[in-house]
Amino acid sequence: MTRMTIRFIFATFLFFTVLSVTTVTAAELPNIVLILADDLGYGDVGCYGAVRVQTPNIDRLAAEGIRFTDAHSVAATCTPSRFALISGIYPWRKRGTGILPGDAALIIPPESVTLPSILKKAGYTNGVVGKWHLGLGTPESPVNWNSEIKPGPLEIGFDYSFIIPATGDRVPCVFVENHSVANFDANDPITVSYKEKVGNEPTGKEHPDLLKQHPSHGHDMTIVNGISRIGYMTGGKSARWVDENIADTITAKACRFIENNKDKPFFLYFATHDIHVPRVPHPRFVGKTSMGARGDAIVEFDWSVGEVLQTLDRLKLTDNTIIIVSSDNGPVVDDGYLDRSIEMLGDHKPNGLLRGGKGSAFEAGTRVPFIVRLPDKANAGKVSDALISLIDLPASFAALTNQTKRQEIPETAIPDSENVLPALLGETNYGREYLVLGGASFSLRHGTQKVILPNPKGQAISSNTHIETGNNPNPQLYELKNDIGEQNNLAEKESTRWEELRTKLQEIRQKQVVVP
Image 1 (spheres, rainbow, N blue to C red):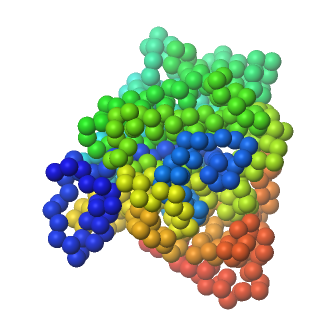
Image 2 (spheres, rainbow, N blue to C red; image 1 turned 90 degrees about the vertical axis):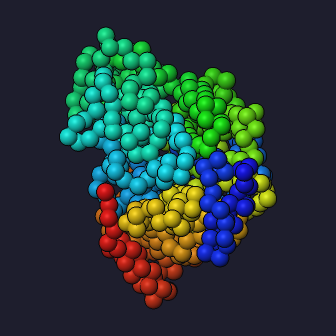
């Protein structure tokens, strides 16, 4: 039996209660590629309105697929957003899911049901390439970077991993391939600390004269490749990355994973470093925009997307692959380095018409680009305003692989993930009814309405990133249908509606779920 088109798979799985069909085998499943940018804003790409930066590969996907205008991460920062994507659990339900240091333990237990484990059970071979930032090792057995590194991605459902352990601005500045540091030299052991300086490596605070990119706030510890980082590190000279080559390295690994698994169903989670700080794109991208390092990093990200598309085309896999491009949270311009991104921003608006940005409770904190291209391209050029989230991918892919029907996923697993497969496949413009969002303050989306809980203690504007946080001692209620920029607070005028949505948010937060 040949592989079915995604439309037939949709019909098979969505209407299994009324259709009589033969069980779908692994050979008939579509490949899935999820490309997740870092800090890419709603207004940062051409198909979402950007004009000062060219993103032809992302725009191609939008022209051939579905562009979502109301898609969200559930958190406005990286670790909690990625935790939700993989676990299907709101990050605020579990302690320790805030932004992790580079030596943190794995925050998703190996026995958990996860996005990759769901697909693995369905017959997929799974790979993760790029930024991880979900921890490695256990609290009882912290990572020793000079020996076997586990548990990690391979223990929660992936079959192959080539990862940046945390972020580009945090030590250790090495890649980890499966269970080992790539290019490790046992004669130059690695030591990492987030508590005190280790070794005699110079720091940015002590030797700013050694820096090629200076910090604007923080980021003044161990210097690697002329850039000071968060945290202290010594050793591992042969294993350290060169920032200018990160995109080339991880994109090549992502494409190689596709090549190596072209004859069987695969899931690739490709989490790029771009456009996170430090922004040091390869020289061939420098000057491609008038916006400096941040704009050039967007072009580099688009190139990575293009390399994946070309690989799928070359291997004749395009007609059997679902590809999704999105971002882990909203945009930030100054995130710790003096890379002239603020000075060179010009009239470019990373958040489009939205208010806020990374870390914010306003829409730009979590509303992100989200594009889905399906194998049959029947929905080419479609624009959907369905309310969906990255947290919904575990349940949606479970439905795609018919695991909901077989009851192979425990009822307690992926408790906050909802099946929005019909929206992903372009069959409806309706997604989920309610979505809890975590930024500086809790908020709830219901249709086009949004409430933000009062926060009497938080700053209104971040002292570091200069982004509006959404913190306000008063209740906030917005009707986004005619106020996408969240300028007209209706909470006082529509106090009954505010109270209804506040009560619903409290109900969701108090729901009893099993959190591993």
